[in-house]
Image (cartoon, rainbow, N blue to C red; front, side, top):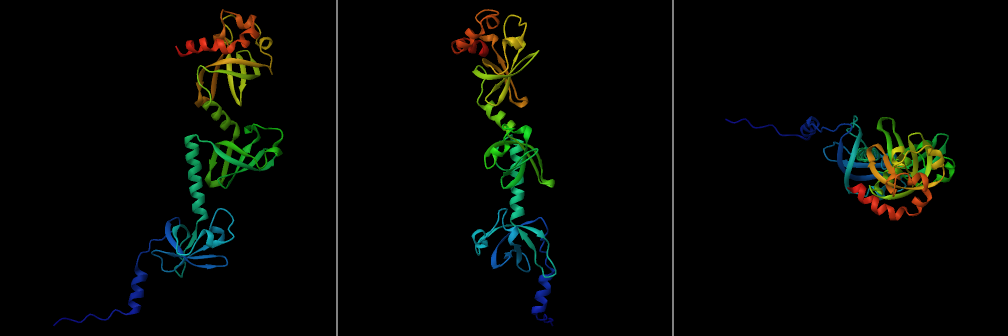
Length: 294
């Protein structure tokens, strides 16, 4: 004779629920929707949780929130990050802000790895440089990596194109460079065989440094003339403008090699008649470009 199964009471059902593995842990991303609002946050219905989770107002967004319902409409499903595991009542603490922070750091790391430029708004000035806001996070540009190094106050509220020098999510550290971003933009506008004009910024025994709209090129002494040059400073005073041909580009090492030698019609013409060479540089460059390409 078969034995009759005992009835399954509500207490038995509750115990069965308690024995289930909800597998909700800190750092996990879960889906949920707003169940109700409070003055300091909202209760979120999370799938698999014994009771609604709670998200404090300060954890709702990376930016300051006035009206919670604008960011978290009732019953709209979205992702949340668990920042505290279940307490004695089975409630978990949630965050959108920290999830957004993680996503922003991932974007910054991708930009760094891909060598991409970013836009940063200058928010303040200190002795070492300027503070900026980049993707809603706080960053810093050292004075040595700014194009404007003297009047830093004039940069406040300006948006600058920057490259990433250093990222440290553990220390919330973001160090940026306007100078490197400018160089990258400059490189993208240059090509081998192009005639450029720039300002002489310095003269060394081995060559002449030329500023070309924020990027620096070098005319090596061997590329100045087909004839020996006795005094580079005399031929190329600092502050003067010079025209030269781009003969090679190395973006990885930020090197631009220039030549005036290739503009000569005969050996020593740059040394003897530099002004004439400069005046007719555009016409000479067409012939010189063919030689470079060959």
